[in-house]
Image (cartoon, rainbow, N blue to C red; front, side, top):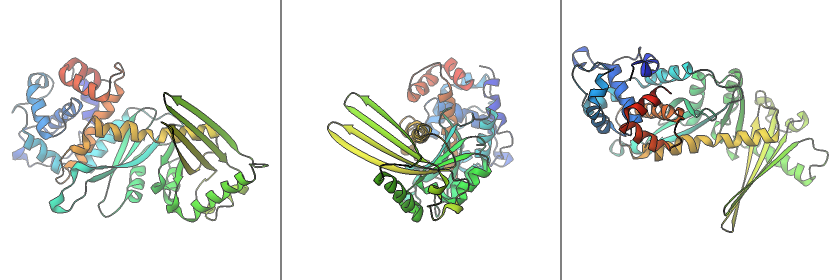
Length: 378
């Protein structure tokens, strides 16, 4: 392997402040970070695993890393990431992501939160760390993350994340908790579009949209300018039907009591999903506001892309990276561990020569140094 395979990533952490005193720096900080990244890619899910990986691959690691004192102990990994500045570590990660190139115009960027349940510190009464992440659906990469403070919620973390994201030309999608006038304003100020879910937490906005669409349906959509699209998917014993209606006429938008408060609001969206499985039928109705003035087909696709953050990020972190089972919980270690796993996930997903699962790719990378090089160069 050539050092250049990780050079771009490690360069992003050149300014990372070392939390250790000089007399305690037996191992170079970037070497510790590099081993942790490789270990996280190769199936290591805690500091003990990271140390075991390093010792098993010491000869190989020494071919491109300076390791005068060998492989750090798991206590060393734990202490370094426990006190490493999490904001600086996140900024290094996002600098690397931005260096990969701009997002495509129209890319759906989903923002959603996930709790690291294993990071609970019950004796100290601390809940598991809650992180809000931004996910580029088409490219399959994490764009950034922000910690949700224990005495706050996603409403404060989302604007902080948006401040550091480069989402120009993209469509930002957020669940109902992010349906806030300030967040819509910030997205538009970033020269991006939004599609925000609306639920009962928005009070009059939700009531007005429900009433408006109910009136359209009562009139059988007669003389109502709108766009409609329907998809039907059948697979084995499952049938899924999705219908989408979009209205964008100014007179409809003016019906909303708080319409002037929403920056660049151009359309209202209703999506009804029906699922039939094993003789049972379930239905779900969702409403959205959007700065886009586009077709129902496009809105339905954006909605489906939003939920890829659950399947392609959160679910993978739980299943392939065992995130909820991880007991890392002291100081800044949970935040920094989350960033490590995001780095590993991005690299593994960007390696597309194999169609294997993320878990299988991680295992293969641990067995095969050449394949790990392929992932690092992806």
